[in-house]
Length: 175
Image 1 (cartoon, rainbow, N blue to C red):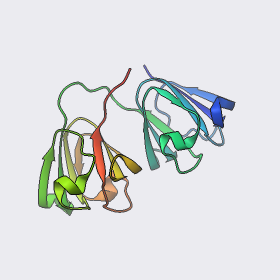
Image 2 (cartoon, helix red, strand yellow; image 1 turned 45 degrees about the vertical axis):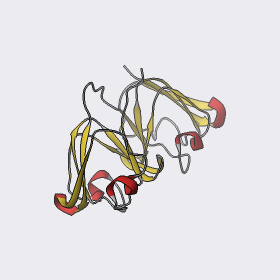
Image 3 (cartoon, one colour; image 1 turned 90 degrees about the horizontal axis):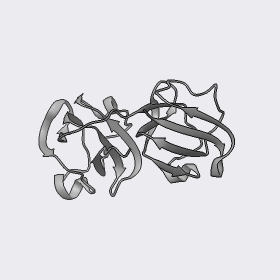
């Protein structure tokens, strides 16, 4: 079971809301979110209702201001728990849409996609095993995109506005 606490102000001050499961619209519980405590579970947070907009992956810990979770502002409008997963991780990334062009398979984290793949852009992805987080910049920085098992024929399928992927990692579960 997961538990996350959202606070309107920095350093765990102001109005707060405790959440235990996914919520497609947090708007009625708080106006802004400037700090978070994750007591249990791994959470994917979204800047917009219905799991849209910029995404952030948070595991157990304290985040005293939105910069701590690489946030760009104080807007969190929906959230969900990342499912627990045991076993292997496997993903294929492709140079072009619809699984065309150069392909490379990964089973481990990749801090710098260009060094391994020789392309700065990833246009399609097949997630075979596990859950993954993509980052626009190398070394796990920049906008984040959460991918679960399935096929992503173009970058917009995982919520990105461009095909630039600088790094990615599989989602570990810290409980």
